[in-house]
Image (cartoon, rainbow, N blue to C red; front, side, top):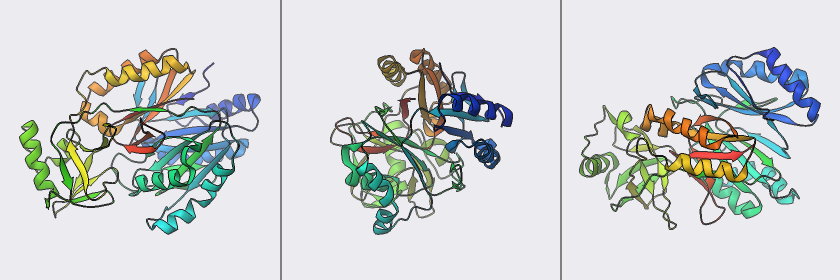
Length: 374
């Protein structure tokens, strides 16, 4: 029986009924809540309802939600944890590496001392955090293969800073929510963006800002390459419209690139991406997934058929949806159909986290789909 529930509005009594039904099965459990951005003002009421009922809550705000019927720009999804050994909500993560280590100390210590069998670390970041890949590196350097890593970015599709992560007591931004899930196999991540032959170097970059490519202003080189490879003229005026269709790829030895979507252009010609771009990184401009492609939905469907979960937690990148337009609805519908009898619930995300194909190293992507049994 699938216990996930979608409410198209904050229905306090319906939520109380869902909590009561779940408490009858497990008095010590909790829920993952995903709230649509349009209903973010209801999050304090949601917290109060859970506190009145004495039941655990963790969650995040996303641009839109996903149910077996498709995308929804309003409402809340509740998904019960069958087991969550620990959770953390860490606000205002610092950029300074030493300070960051201190803030992660408790999380790392608990995981290293845990005797949970085959756990996963489920991570939700505020999408405005500029050092997400660095946080993932820190976690892996301290925890290594003790856990499977998967997760996403939450927040507003406007890319304006606002609180987006919460539990029973906190409602914060610029931070991280993490859950340790015992006996969980992790997730699959796929984007199926392909690498052309052309490559270049981010000769100056800091955090998620690319200042120069091949020792020239980043936007100038980006314009030339998109024109040369794809015949499209990108200007400062149409940049936001077209940038999502021509993302950067960070080359990796295993051949699977990290996708970085440029989302903002500065007056000095520098480009801001969703996710960090290290200096001297080899870049390319990727061949984006084609309209009507079944490649990614086939992979998710095969994954669901192999594991046969009652519920499949699915995150779909907002940038991917912008690129595909109405075709994103078709891709999501195909994914939902191929995953049956699992019921698909999730959200539109602002960056995705999965493990590398050649190991268990956590990687931060754009334009991807993440699917995990729940």
